[in-house]
Image 1 (cartoon, rainbow, N blue to C red):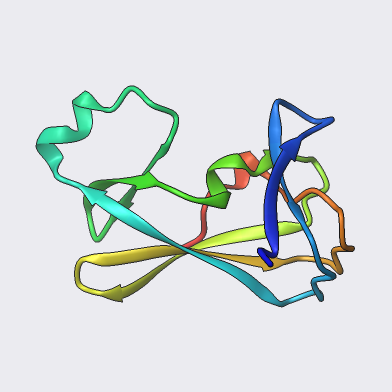
Image 2: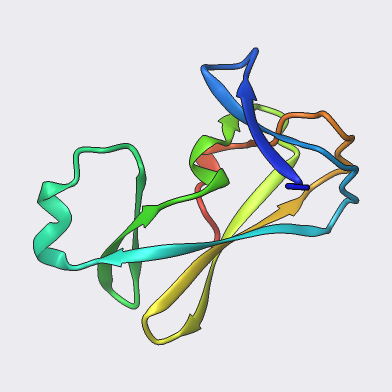
Length: 116
C-alpha cells in the first residue's frame, strides 16, 4: 500500500494525503529530483520545477512525485529539505512538523521555501 495518495483537496485542486499516521519529526518521503542542464532552463514552462542557488550557481530541478502536489497552509504539517546524495543527485525529503493523522492532507508553507 502506498503511504501517500493524491486526492481532491479542499485547499486547492488536488493534494497529497497520508494513508497512515506520521509522527512529528518523521521523514516520510524522499523524492529524487532531475537536475536540468542550464540550456534547458528557459524551455521549462511547467510548474513541475524548482530552482535554487547552490554554491553560487542557479540550479533548476524537475520535481516528479508527491511534493509537487503539496498545498500551502499558514499552519503547515510538513517541511521539505533539499538533500544531496552525490555530486549530481539531489532529492527532496519530507518531514512531519507535527503528528499527522491518517487521512490528513500534507501541507507546506510555500513562502518558507525549501531548506538546504
